Length: 342
Image (cartoon, rainbow, N blue to C red; front, side):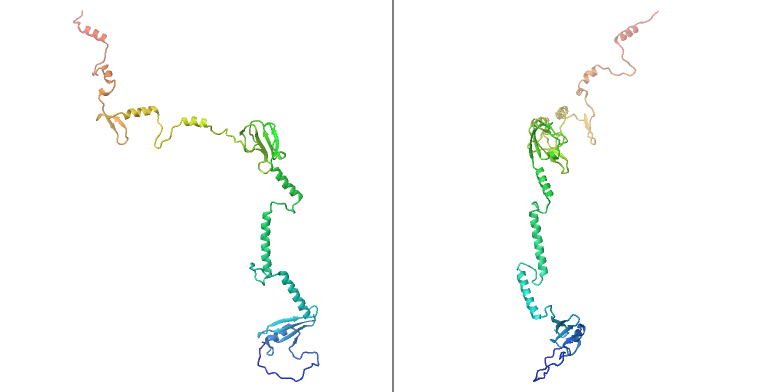
């Protein structure tokens, strides 16, 4: 592992050292294998923090410089052979390029939530904002002409818009009204006589309209089913009640009263007569306690209208006797006076 030794004793040499051979004075200054260099930095007791070492790649003819940056022996790359071969020149060129990039990028705005060191996140933020704005703009202009559309698409849109516009077509009789079709779509006719609709009308059959009614041909289901449509301005009220009709029907009605019902006049007369009864003699009438039926117990014959006259024409019943005519009684009486006969 690399060490930090600040108390080392140095020897002063009064003369400069001149190497007489093409190799480094320090045995561990130049390396030719990255694995060996790493092992040295991490395990050799003479490795020290801050030591500069180089790695030579013989096959690629490149050199890299490293510094041991901590006691763990981790290596930090300082420089390497450049394409131009002049590290200072390359660094200066790189600094100029970085300055140009910073000038092109500009300073991060205060409204951005992206960290200054996260360029890709900033790009994504800008992209998302642009897409949101683009969607909003497309929504505002979705009904406008799009230059990417073909002439055929434009012609189709124009034809659709024209077909939905009403076009005056003059006056005609109901019989002369042409059959609804694509060629008649949008045309408005003034029907000069009164008519009743048939199956060629959106309103259905049986609707009556007066002379002067305007009708227009439309695609009733957006699938090529063309029909005539009566334009607003006239409403067929033939199916509705008139004021006189309603008044006539109301004249045959009575006001509804809660808790009341209609009964026949004859029944009202009977009820009125019954209401005039002040009372009955005791023992003559009786009301059953369960069925609430009224029954007659006994009524004096004098209270029965016509009963006395009817009884005057009657005789008492006698057992073993029968009624006979007066002429026969006279004959029997005459016979009773005969004393004897020869």
